[in-house]
Length: 468
Ligand SMILES: Cc1cc2nc3c(=O)[nH]c(=O)nc-3n(C[C@H](O)[C@H](O)[C@H](O)COP(=O)(O)OP(=O)(O)OC[C@H]3O[C@@H](n4cnc5c(N)ncnc54)[C@H](O)[C@@H]3O)c2cc1C
Figure 1 (cartoon, rainbow, N blue to C red):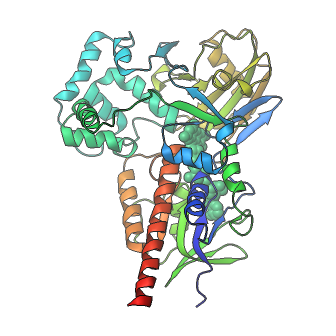
Figure 2: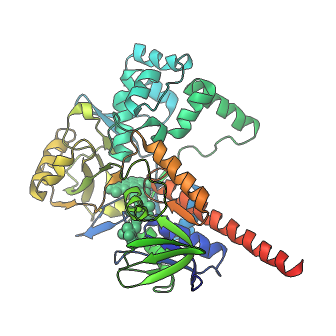
Figure 3: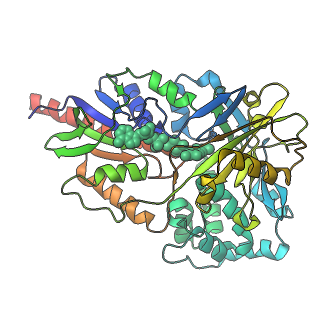
């Protein structure tokens, strides 16, 4: 049998695949890797749309600058100077309650003092100190209601609408906030767990400095990040576009990957794909323990970019989210040109309205014109928009957002045992362990580190073989 031509084959040139490739190349330029991407561009879910001076995002709008791995990737992409930041301290967020936008203070104590919920509801939060850990795998809604009281549900709803476009009645708390659930199990209370962590950090001199992080993007939009990372790879030697992987075959000394016309062999295989795309490829491998589920739900959204003149009175800040209990058309909107002024031409402002999500997939069936009109009518009830938008564009992402719902922890455990058993199979990407860009960057580094340490071990063994 021919020995593998590549040390590492990476499937997918989204942020995860490009992240693994860039970390490997940076640490060990001698590693032979190849990224295979089915589309003709890098970036996957990350894509920006520039038109008539308005710059909107089809996928992610940014990421927080509190993750070392993401910062390293920005450096490896050579984009240090193109970074744009909107500090959370300045760019306040709003939540829609009873048909009005309410400012959410940026610090926990100020949140408690704000008149967002009644005093009895505030006192109910403290019941967390005495509540036993909730057994089983509860939904986010059930868990929040049990620990902190039902008055916090609209806020939890807003948080998980903003991240997952999800449904808190279905998202699993163990999947989406595993760290908080650990605090609950370990300390019997989330509040007590947070205090303990604070005390430990203080004792170890690791107190957080510098306050709140900043939302980060690039002057020409988020697509710049995958473009920058891909530019560091040699086309057709290190990255191939228009190359869809169809089959994976396990071989004695690695993996055989088949596309329509070609075959590639590699010692290590990295699946840097959204959960469902990875499960579809893994399904055809012989002798594989079957996963507990063959696919997970996804939430699809559309972004409606609306450009207004300066007459529009858009509240200053990051944007707002509307919990389901408000029964509004839009999930929320980003005040994009407040955060990043270059997103609209002079004298104009840009709003990006999010519609659909896990609870309203039917809205994605609407025609563009209907979506624009419904979004405008919804928003003008919340802010002073005297005229219809002068610019409007509906942006429809190609894929959905993986939903980590009930049963998901079992799927993650299956992935972990598969990786541990195989040694040369690595699975990361959209939805596996978190869904944000920072989660992808951390997982990409974890994969690269595993491959690098195995490589080091192999080299040490070879050296021992020669001298002893
Ligand atoms: C609408 C939307 C809004 C978001 N907003 C935010 C946000 O504001 N902040 C944030 O942090 N995160 C956000 N995210 C999440 C963020 O975009 C993802 O975490 C990240 O882009 C996932 O990267 P990935 O490489 O894991 O997956 P993907 O980006 O999906 O990349 C996977 C790649 O694999 C390729 N591929 C698939 N199958 C094959 C195959 N068989 N052969 C070869 N190639 C294949 C695909 O073409 C794709 O390029 C958002 C996501 C969406 C969809």
